[in-house]
Amino acid sequence: MAGKVIARLVRELCTRADFPPATPHDFRRTTATVLAEHWPIQVVRDILGHTHVTATERYVRQSADVARAAAASMTLPDLARG
Image (cartoon, rainbow, N blue to C red; front, side):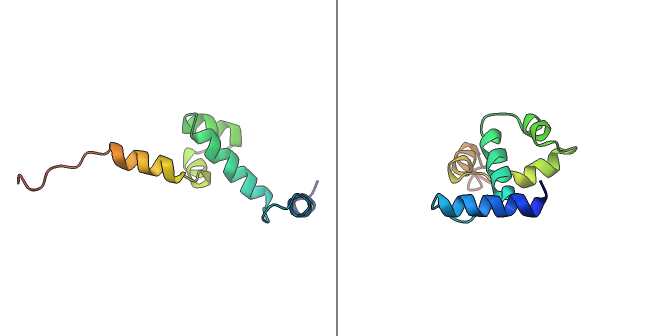
């Protein structure tokens, strides 16, 4: 199938299912994000077929929970002790 045909099909299916508009690329990003929450980024890279992990990292959208957990795990130096 051509890309435009697939995009139109996804758009029509979203409309029928009363979902917000989406593109095939949206589904690819969502898949990458969900996989990255459970698997190493190198595994996600291989599944998506990327050559470089940096391309995969652009696809992954961190959830707010993941970002908060990462921030909470960081330790900062106590600057007051100077």
